[in-house]
Image (cartoon, rainbow, N blue to C red; front, side):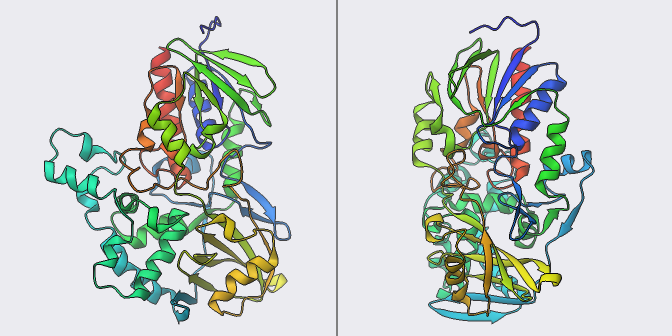
Length: 447
């Protein structure tokens, strides 16, 4: 494989944030780029769509923050604006079948005490949050610290609470939070990921909540990914899945689902871990990479939008064995006398995202007088082009998983939020970071 064009050429598989930003970076360096996207739209797991009566809602990624350096650069570059999610008046949380009530401040105070224990050691384990494996890779690391880092990747994120004299109510409260955060069972969730999130948030639970649940783009994610795409000169072929990728030290050949073959000097595949099984790689991915793909991430949950009658300013939590683990009000529709809430759960099979009855049964656990009149969402786990929601890390895989996808000896490169160094998996910031850094590796290699 040795393309003959005068200018170097790169194929980008996927038109999410990572693929779009990588293409822009490559074009700025004089590289010919072609993008092939399996879906009939751009954006990837960020998708602003009209739902619940024509309201612009985020089916995937939602929140941004000025302390997320890569996405904030793009927000500034394209003149986007942000606005906060609303303050909350009432809080509900469930433990052992009983509903507790209070204010959001009271709920935050209870959680903060738990998060301190879950975050314990984050400063030592992650001295450089955007170099998350520094402790393992530095020759100067104390052997005891290295062992503690490895040990912190084992077990469950809630293990530290079960031996610390905490009540079942407190453990259930933490389970509610992290079942939503990990988008899967807390029993299989690596404790290191929570500590890494803490390090990216100055080791403060309040800042972590602000970064991941507070500020939204006024024009939605669509306003940002469409602005990036508008800066590209290259074609973006939609509804064009890639079937296989052949790659070696001199180039790459991509075969589309249509049978068409395209050669280039390199290829960047931005499919998430949950969708990499759709592509046949020759030579195949490494044994460890294929093991991670076969196992999947911890992200088997869902996000749902629910419209209820009347005005309800609520935040609610329930342990992961309930359909919805975290629910909060996002939009007050005065003209409709209704409220739109967003919910997250740890198991996408526990709810029908489009069924009002299913949503009603899920919210009834809080006995908060919520009457569902509409609901909707997108099942990212069942979607073959994602196979997961945002990528969260299984026990043992923070150390021995995602980082291996950043290694290559050929002209095949993998990029995306799943493989980011900073906000790994969870927010758009990580996708943009990975798109930029991967594109720069390709540019250096081609030179």
